[in-house]
Image 1 (cartoon, rainbow, N blue to C red):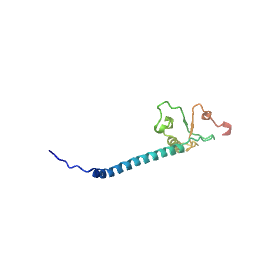
Image 2: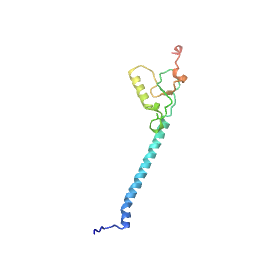
Image 3: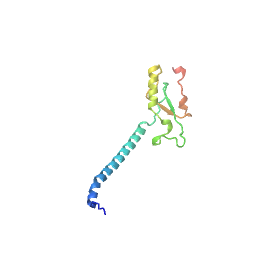
Image 4: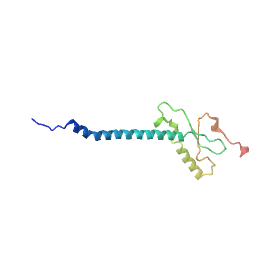
Length: 128
């Protein structure tokens, strides 16, 4: 018959205490990182609140807002039309400023729907 050396329950508890502390610390770290990510996402959405530039006759890039189909949302519940906003528009307008004489808003972007009357505003020729 084989005999095994069994540890007392006190020794097992002492050996698992550091493992439990490590597990609790890891869970706390994951929760903290999740909270930081949620706060950062809220801050990003607050910073990208859409404020349209009033019309002044200068060229302004417009992103078209549309109703997203069911299931067509990006991570965080963002609609699909917001992908790349506003970095893509700012980059495009800076390139346009560098390669042509277009007097355009480089950092301001409007977001409109296709039925918005602001979309087709023009400066009258007499005012040019």
